[in-house]
Image (cartoon, rainbow, N blue to C red):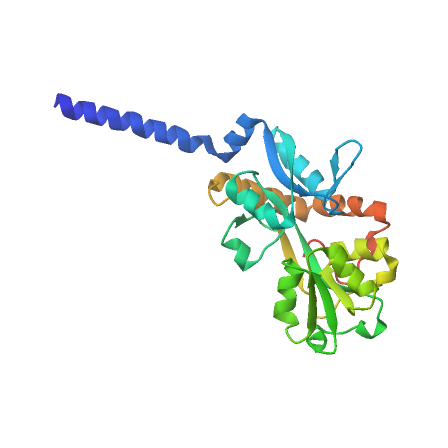
Length: 274
């Protein structure tokens, strides 16, 4: 009996220790660390922008992340990264979450997604009037040549909706923009937010055009699969709440103002709330 009692006692202690670890959770880990870590990309306005003089990060993603950090009562730590590496940073635990992620089935096999923070749409940026009012089906034709940045969400979209068109894929977005401005491509395929900024910064490329039907895609926050359900629920609740009451739209529009982009520049039918 004495031996059985000892075994039961040891089991009870082990169970209590495991329970303590389980109760710690992701939120407690972040609070213990004192910082919320996110990846950020250089010169990726309006999402991110790093002031070379002060080293300070700006952009609507930074505003969103700061709000989550404030809610958790911690500071924000920005880890310089790239779009290609942001998901890997989440997977490896280098960061706690990544913003402005397009929710694709392929990415869902690597990380967990929050509820949408806002909705974006795929558009064309072009100076060619003959592309006005076209449907994606009409654009899916060998007579058209489109430029995209390799491996991006818009690249994946062209594979699905424009398989018959000529697609020029470039390592960087700037190279894709040059292809359009020099006449090598008829239009740049990108998202609404990027398209609006690009058309303002490089007027020669043309204006934003929205083919039909409008392809609206949710932008989400990616978190590690290993995080607990409490943290995942918190992140989704934050995203849903701030999207529905308009905070996320306010942060986005504020980050677009320096480029002369206003709410009135948004095409009819487009809304950040989906």
